[in-house]
Length: 44
Image 1 (tube, rainbow, N blue to C red):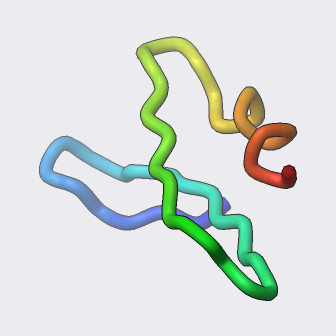
Image 2 (image 1 turned 135 degrees about the vertical axis):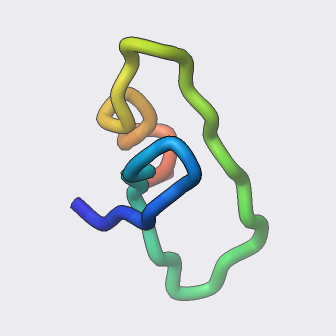
């Protein structure tokens, strides 16, 4: 999984590319959650 180094450690992220994007939403999740929760929404 891709990541970048933040001030407090590694920050992991996911990216879903679109052929013709209409928007650039950003999903932020809480402590204990994971990015897999947003996969279905991101692929719509």
